[in-house]
Amino acid sequence: AKTLLEGGKTEVTIYEAWDHWKARGGALGLAAGKRILEHFGLSEELAEVSNSSEGYTWQFHAKGSKLSFVNVPGCIAMRTDLQRVLVDSMPPDVVKLDHKLVDIVEGDHEVLLTFENGVTASADLVVASDGIHSFVRQKIFGEDVPHFTGFRVLYSVSSTPYRPDPSISKTHWLEAEGAGYAILEMTAGRGSTRHDLCVLILRSEEAITDRWDSTMVKERFEQVAQCLDLPVLQAAVRHAELCFDWGVYESPPQKSWISPRQRIVLLGDAAHATAPFLAQGANMAMHDAYCLGQILLKEEISLSKGLQLYEASRKIYCEGVVAKSSRMGEMHTATGLRAAFRNYFLSACVLRNMSTLFRTDPTKHMPWEKHESLLQRLGRSVSSICSEKPWVHW
Image (cartoon, rainbow, N blue to C red; front, side, top):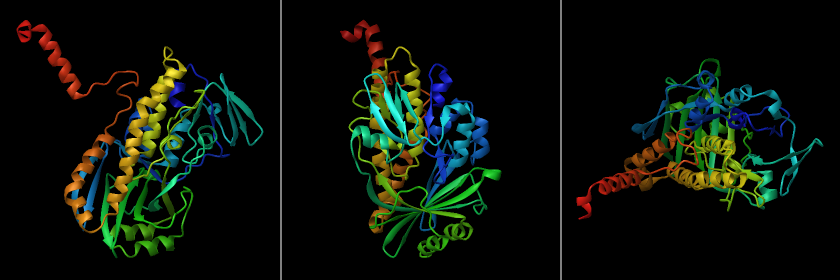
């Protein structure tokens, strides 16, 4: 919506099911998303609600020793604060709260929407960004059921600072009683918006709910954490004001994100719900939105061709990130020889992959521009040189 409004030629309406703004979950790591917000001129607003405007360091530790690190050209902010920054930057009449979609009918020329409050509406294009349990996807693209990945995430949030350096985030790999764990510690925001967070990743044979407002009592978090000897985890337990307990789910890959009559398209978790272990869910959704918005603003590209270009630009990339994130979860909870291999051999590869993801810049190239790899550029240069030197042909 923000991208289309910047273009100034499109009528945009956001329909939100809740009757008030509700940001479920804790913090977001923004890299690609940060660049998009800066492109919109929201640098100052983002700096006020994030841990750093200059980037931060992410360290990996195992058995009490630092293994490696990566410098992240991004920031960490609370979801509530990021949502407020975006909403406040748009005209208030763009958003319609308390509009829960109960029916959607796609025609050749428009899409008809019916809401629980009795309101009906029509649109030339509907962008379905309604999450992993997307009503639109189920209704238009066919029934599917997200599957439990076997991972569980316990998540504590505290507005009382207990971490010494908010510019450094850490991942700790631990083993206890034959099980592997990963503990992520980070700081989101600054000043009055600062929150210190601790995330405990473990395996679970029992399918845990994926509701993002699924909270747990502090004593339960403490009970799970007490078998792990890590000072920051114990500090997180002492200062926790809110604790979440989530199961990690993924949705099966979609054959297409575009509806049969090409009037409805999927975006974000509705298209490619991912495990959170690479911190790319929100970044991919924001990148999707920016990419689609730029294409729709291009008047010489038809709607049909534009949606195909959007899917071609994003689908393979996003599905690749989803696969990598699942493997990251397996690596986080490795034990024994696999854990040793991870610590001393795989961690460098992981950092390279993460560095590539963090440095993705959605604003650098437009989707309709041709991208050349290094080898393609080299080949073109050699071809150009050869064409200018007759003796080469001899």
